Amino acid sequence: MALADELLEVLACPKCKGDIEYKRDDEVLICHRCRLVYRIEDDIPIMLVEEALTLDEWEERLKGE
Image 1 (tube, one colour):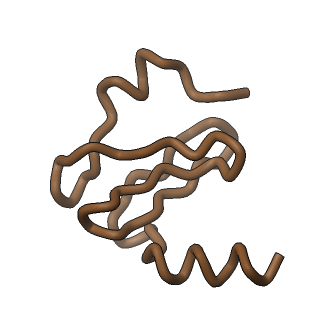
Image 2: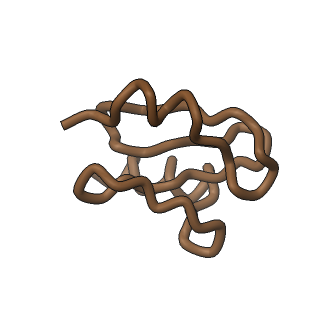
C-alpha cells in the first residue's frame, strides 16, 4: 500500500523542515537538502533523524541488493 497523497503533502524533513521526495518503489522518503533517507515500515514513515540513513549509505545498500 502506498502512502496517501494527503499525508505526503504535510510531511517534511524533521531536521530541516524542507521538502521530501517519496520513492514509492523503494519505500523511502528522501531529504535532498540534508541528504537523509527515512524508511517506511508497514506504511508508517519512520521520521526520526537518528534512525535515518545518509543518502550515501542508502545508495550503497541499493548496490548490494
